[in-house]
Length: 244
Image (cartoon, rainbow, N blue to C red; front, side, top):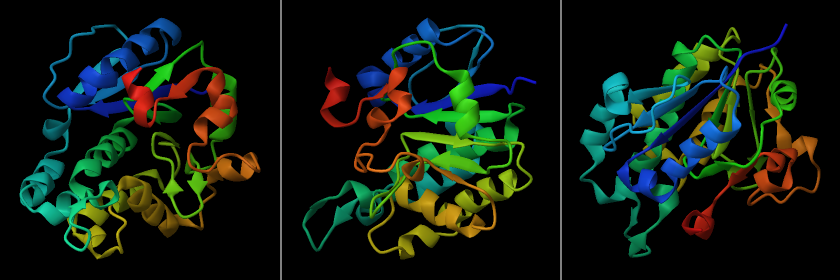
């Protein structure tokens, strides 16, 4: 029996203009019609309409995220300001990166698919996806699939979830708990989602998880996706690659 795979992404107006629109267009070009992309948006009204694209206004479907953002949006330290360094530091911006997490938790709790592939808005699909490979790396007895990098922790531009796993909703609730209780503010300079998701995932060590860093020994840890078989059909446009 073929397993169903759906996708999810999220963006605001700035990211849509920079790369999100291209990401959606590349999905339309390369993905089969039976695969659905769930887009969690802010600010930018949907304009690319296809039968297999479903749009969700992020703050409406996740009102607790809106409450979290409103609570902390005017606090510089919660948005990445480091007084000790006198500059903004991305890994301390818990407010910004919360949006990606809550898009995924909503999808996990509401999906009817067998596999969820989360791709950042700076992902470009370049060829027909290998659905058999995606199903293989997220088996039905695994909670999730990821690249857990030394020191940097999870590469969250690419993530896979198994919404049919018996602990899937617990995993989603745990991720949300980290934000809604303010737990993340107690982490030592680790408020970006690559840390919060990894820390949340560490609560489920009794569940099978697929760490692709272990599948591909020697893979470049700072940017693993382009150095894995995923590069055959997608490009994670990290950093200056977004401006291409």
